[in-house]
Length: 231
Image (cartoon, rainbow, N blue to C red; front, top):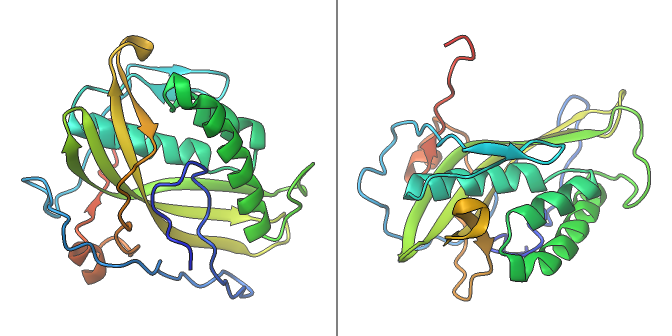
């Protein structure tokens, strides 16, 4: 099984899926426990309210301008993964470029295109061209954890729930994925913002688990606090 951690393409982990009539069974990612990981102070089980961006960019409205804090880095990592994991190659490439450092944007775009093909292949969809009516995929952050790697450099683990359908009459695909992203503060980009950078010292991501489960807590995940839109 391919290590999901810290790849430019931000693509799906290759794994076997058993398609059921109603849903695909949720399979936790196999990941090696990282003994060297030290959680930041206060990394308990309390929900985390992700930081708000300063604004939004592009026709897709990608969030940008996250605070120059560890939480800001974690929030930017979550935004990166949610934007880049899509069945729309153009959107994936635009997101990968936006959240990469200027000198790495070409590699990020190429990786995103490859990742989109990988997701389509995982779902049994054509790797290129138009999608069947109703085919769609969405990634939602359900867990987060982070560690300071160096000054202005934060290693963020993001746990997302990927939900997808191959079309109107197709069964729902739903599975959690965990991935590490190394976020680096770029002081001049967009007036200062976090970008996703390649990691020369990659480690395995924590195991994926359902929020509220003992495995979720044991892996050090923190659930995401969701604000009521009415508030």
